[in-house]
Length: 257
Image (cartoon, rainbow, N blue to C red; front, side):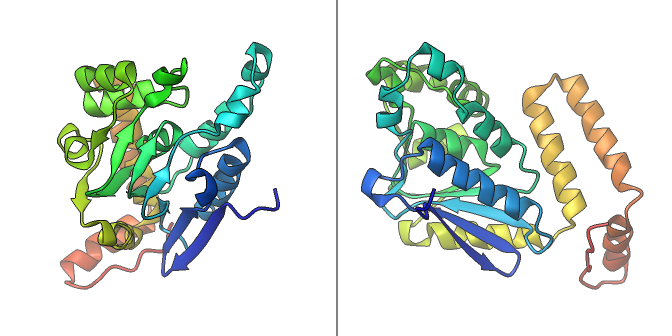
């Protein structure tokens, strides 16, 4: 994998990863997805990184999977494809992920955005799962995450018709948290990431884990997980520092332990 399909930029405690396959509208081939996951894992273990932004180009976030790869698949190769493991590794990233979306986020591109913790998009953004038009269906979490984010009605319409929705419909449905001017999308996402990155790494990991539990378990199990994470933080220096700083009216200095 000699091609540099993922560009990396670090500013303070925010790492921005940019999809860089403009010739195929940032299609997420297996090799491209693996490069992305590798960069995410590097950021996840870097003490100098507090939050991660994933973005594409001004016209396209990511237009789906690589159809040339899919064309070569049969049942046997689909069953042994490394792609599910790559998506699982992405799902295991413990630091906050913020997607900055301009243009099309289709198929795997939409699934990538849904896998992030926050999505900031420009007014030109379009989100869709058009796999049904190709005799396919979403296979990287699209059906499961979309129905949890946008509800049964919207998920059913998007998955079964293949039709995309615009930025404001995505905002109404809860797929994105903010819509801004296209030119400011990345700047706004990095601004939010910078704010997040200033907090305790331990608290951020715990909060993210609890939020994930809310989507993957029952209410009673989620409440139990939340309490367990809350209690675990009671033994950290960061928690004491945060409370002390508040009482002393100063900015806290979190150390990550």
